[in-house]
Amino acid sequence: MQITLKATLISCALLVIPALTNASVIVNYNADAVAGQAAFISSLSGPVVVENFDGLADASAANGGSHQNSWESHAASYATNVGTFSLVTAGQGGSNLYNNHIMIESAATGEYGRETLSTYDRDLWLDSNDAREISWAFDNPQTNGMNAFGFLIADAADVGATLKLLFEDNSQSDSFTISPYLQSGNLGYVSVSSSMNIIGATLSFINSKGNDGWGIDDIVVGRLPEPGSILLLALGLLSLGIARKQAAR
Image (tube, rainbow, N blue to C red; front, side):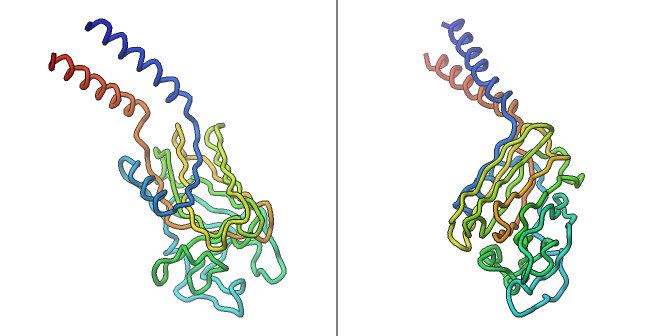
């Protein structure tokens, strides 16, 4: 009986290992932002790097006649704790000032629904300013050795546009497209995991239209447990269960 149990244990290991080995990049979007954020953060192991954008703006807002004429800060790119965000392709021009920049916004200046990201006074976020494409380069050494990240995203894909999230990491890539016609002010949670460290990787936000904007906030970059550790834990628990059954006999 003992030989049979050992053979079964080895078979289980052989079944699990290929699934873990083939893992590359996974992009997820959860329309329930609270549940998605809680699940992602609870899955991490070890230290994390956080960016909430609150330190990337002047003390006072630049207020104008409309949301599109108001901002906390604007620039072609922002270097942050979790990497560099840069405008790649601008969206609509016209009344949308500084359409060649991305912006830092607040509840006092934010555009058309992105205020769902603001939970207290002076709670700022990164705003796309209706850009067609923005890139996020993981070029900050603080995130070296980490393989997962998550963030809140608001007001995406609500004017008939799609928003494609394309993550590329060491020749591996995966994407998720947020479908059009979501309710204005929608709030979801994006989480991305990679089988390799994310240093040097990029996430592209690709909008199908130049008049749809979105905002992101409360980014957390961390590390998921090693697949090997998960496997060892699973095999350990399996072995423990077998040992208890043998002892009971």
